[in-house]
Image (cartoon, rainbow, N blue to C red; front, side, top):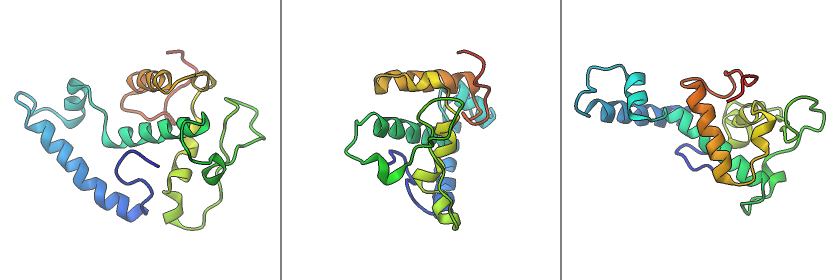
Length: 157
């Protein structure tokens, strides 16, 4: 269901495989002429690239949006349950299920809940995937290198 590497793997497997991915991206950006001696985050900024973690998070949010809007053949109730007690924020807040194992905490349906719930109501008004992508792009550009759960959503974009 996730468009990035590491979709539903365990915490150990995801960490084990993402470290080589990060090393590849770091090495590749260092190979570009004029960027070899610049810090990694600055290289990403100059190349207009996101970190691999941010790309995974963005892909998860997009897949969740598609699922909510009925753009996939996935049954929403298989992965998520709506939090009907939410009084703040948008009306599509998810309920986080209790998990007993570390492996389960890294499944798509668990890791996306806090990030999805942190999105402001305005983002849920998007009618198309491209509109939602644009919103996420502005959000990430506004908060780089922070993630949506760490930024201040009260400030308009």
